Length: 425
Image 1 (cartoon, one colour):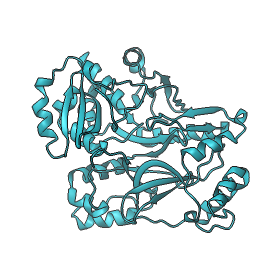
Image 2 (image 1 turned 180 degrees about the horizontal axis):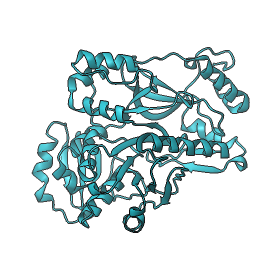
Image 3 (image 1 turned 180 degrees about the vertical axis):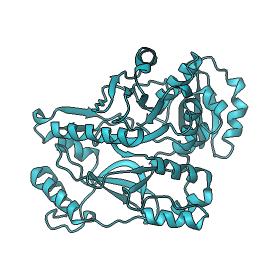
Image 4 (image 1 turned 135 degrees about the horizontal axis):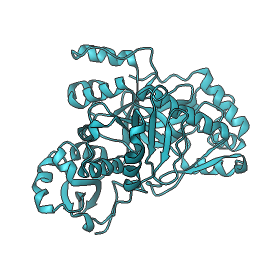
């Protein structure tokens, strides 16, 4: 399904990086590769967070205009370093996405940046309000200024957006009557999460994008056609198997710019594997075969159309469009169960989804895979215990539901949730 060839432009970009960063040359040669003689990326070693941090320390950081830490959910932080040109390019990519999805250049647009911490977001086609993870501030902004704009875009992470929209609905805000759009980032979302979100704000209003501290805010994004394809994959298991084999979940389908980043998949051909990212534009902190920890699979539009046709679906992908990436989330598991599987089930029942914060934890206890789930304030375990047991009957987990204040891993919107790992409680 994937075209794994490496063009001359990619190799040339890597050679430029090596010339500008002696540490890269040393690293590759220490791994037994000559970057100037390499004809394929596969001839070069894979880099990781350790190497990236060493590379960052070798850069004159006074030339940077921003250092951006990662979320640290893996237990270790990595960093992105951005020059003025990098920041300009990042802002243009945000504008391109807003114009593509929401026609922001033609419509008066208010954008609420609900991302945690100091994650920046700037735009020349929208009025940006850096709210952060403050529900009261977000609702006040909408009340005071929302009517002056033709559309409002919320940009944030899944659990905070869920909490904001639910609290607004409880305060009698009818989100569907507002010209509201939602752009979700920060972590992988299930199609059931999108469906739940759109049950609050209206159909066709929720899209996902992916960035990372090392790359920038938006490097992979959904479009209307990729969202339609993902919805088909979620409802048609045979179609999903034809494209991905024994896939447990419907992956997010992203576009990306091949002039900005080259994507490889490390694994068996025709199966999801680890993503390796190589940046192609001149950057203060370049990536070369960087293993991000995400899992994915490259798609060829023409082949996807053929599979759609064989399964009685109308081929609808523009075969001249940007390359496609199927994104399956992270590789974390407990007892063979992934957080992505849990997310798909958790939001499949809107009644259950409305009762939880969205925080959960998979962990092993005496050979049993436990799934801990946190209820929202005011909800009682007895009302939902049986519903959750039935909902998760298809997964090899034992479910334990916690009332909000008794959950052992408190939810903090300023930090990404760690969904897998041991927590005492």
